[in-house]
Image (cartoon, rainbow, N blue to C red):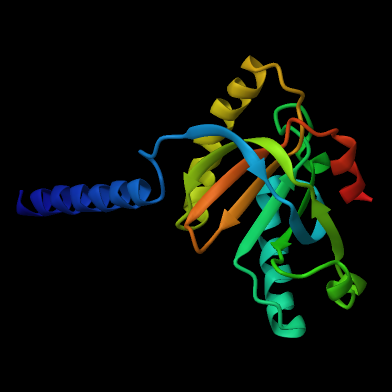
Amino acid sequence: MKILGLAAILVLVILIILFIILIMNGLLSSVNITEKKVGPYMLVYSMHVGDYKKVGPVMDDLYNDLKDNFALETTKGFGLYYDNPKEVDSDELRSIVGCIVEGKSAEELSEVGKKYKIGEYPSSESVVAEFPFKGKLSIIIGVLKVYPKLSSYIKEKQYAKTPIMELYDQPNEKIEYIASVHIPGAIFDNLLE
């Protein structure tokens, strides 16, 4: 009987710890949607076709390469997701992922441009949702909590569908989900070329 009591206490402690971890990563955080001007952002990126769940290592490799081989320290990563995973097969999902490089022009990044794509995310009035960023678990929780609300907001306002940028702002510990609904989608298609 003592063993069952200790096992029950141990399970309860583990569940409490897991719940605290989920709370710290945004489980109970509210999703606030605003409209504001964002950008421009100078992007260094790679294209990715396939399951969005597999973009993390691509982004990490690019970040580490910029830091180790190009002496570029960045604090903001991004993923620009073109397709809705509910409408497109996972092996055909299109995205670009990489880092936002602040304070540099495309010309100053010419050496980096020999290995990676360089592009500018234009300044635009956008629908933006913010969510806490503590790590990879925050990204998973954010996807589950933010996208339904963001999609409803865009549909309610009758905005055109555009790719969604997830901007991972490490210094400010937040993820911004950005839908630039007031600029033509063709601008984003140019980044895929």
